[in-house]
Length: 60
Image 1 (cartoon, rainbow, N blue to C red):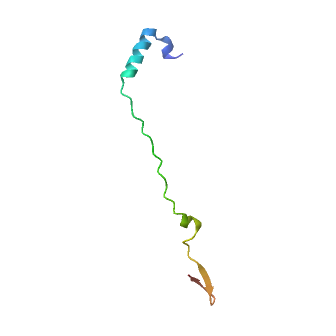
Image 2 (spheres, rainbow, N blue to C red):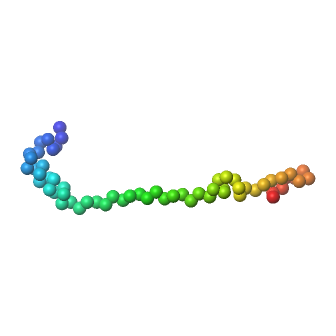
Image 3 (cartoon, rainbow, N blue to C red):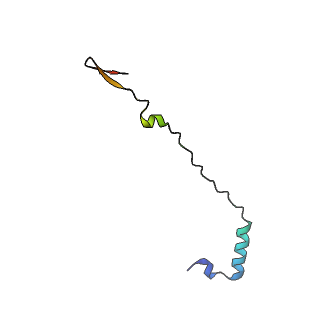
């Protein structure tokens, strides 16, 4: 059984008046920060290139 079921109509009105008088809290909206994406790194464009020269592996 809820508390509000046991209250009289007058008590419910008083509670509603008190509820309206309370300052409303501002809800903080969380701004979703966009991630900075480096597309060239994701695609592998900035990777070192290794080649074989005279039996040795060299970086280009």
